[in-house]
Image (cartoon, rainbow, N blue to C red; front, side):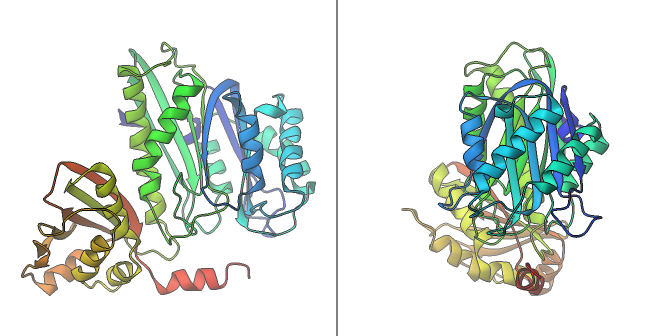
Length: 406
C-alpha cells in the first residue's frame, strides 16, 4: 500500500467538480461539489447518531436501500436541516443531477453542511448543478476543487488517496472530507466521501465501512458536539478488475486495511484542522484490559477540555490526563497506568503507576511546543491497543463560534 495523488479521482471511473452556485454570498467561495461515476457503483453510508438529522440523510438512506449509487452532490453554506421543504429540496436536487449528468435520480446521494435551520431554495442548485456537470473531470485538480467546495470553517482542504493490491490487481481508494467544528462524530466525520475502483459487493462494503469507523472517525473529536449532518459515503466502481469481494477472507482484509489507513489519516487531518487549533493531539493506549476499554480511554483523553487547554498553554499537567482516564466508563484498574508526553522534540515520562514521575518542566514545554503531540498511555493490564485524535482548545475556537452566523 502506498500514497498516491488524485484524491477522490484517483480510482478508475470517477470525475469531480466544485463550483460557486450562490448559496454563499461570497462569489469567490465554491459551495457546490459533485462526484459522478462512469458506472453504477456498489455504495454504502454511515450517518450521524444525532436525533436531529439533515434532510439529505433521509434521502440517502432511501436511495441506498438497494446498495448502489452513481453520484454524490454536496453543498456548503446551508445545512438543509430543520427546514420544512428539506427532503423535497434534496429530492429535487437529485432530479437536477439526473437530468444534467444522465444518471438515475435514485442513484444520486445528496449531502449538506453549513448553518442549521436556515431557509433554502432550489434556485442556486438549478444554476450550479449544470455548471458542475460541465466542469466534471477525472483529475487531481478536479478533486481539489470538490474538496474546497465542501469546506465551511476548515482552514485547509482534506483529501488523500492510496494504492493497494486485491487478488493480484492494483486498486485505488481516494477521499475528500470536511469538518473543523461540531466534531464528535460517533459514526463518521462531518462529511466524508470515498471512492474506490475495487470490486466489492454492497453488503461487504457496508460491513467494511461500519467496521472501520469504530477505530478511526469514532475515535476523533474537536469539541464534543455531534453534527446533525454527519455523513460518510463510499462508492466502488469495480473497474480495477479484481474478483468481486463478496465474503470475508484475504481480499476483504486487504480492502479493510486500505480503508483503515486512509480513514485514520483523514481523522487525524480533521482533528489537526479543528477550529482554532494549534496542536494535533494523538493519544495511544497500550496494554488495555480489552479493546472497548482502550478505545474509551484514548478518546476520553483527547476529549478533556482541561487537558486540551493545558496543551494550548504548553503545560504538562499530567494530572488532567489521569483524571480523564479515571472518569472513563468501564471496569478497569489505573494502578499500573503510566503516561508519556511525546513529540518531534522528545519524550517526557510524567506519570508512573498512577503517580508523579520526576521530569523536567523545561523539557516538557519543549515537547508541547511542537504541533503534533502524542500522549502515550500504558495501562499495564492486558494486550488491547487503541488510538484517538483531538486538538487543543484555544481562544480562537470561542471567537469562531461566537461569530459563526455573522
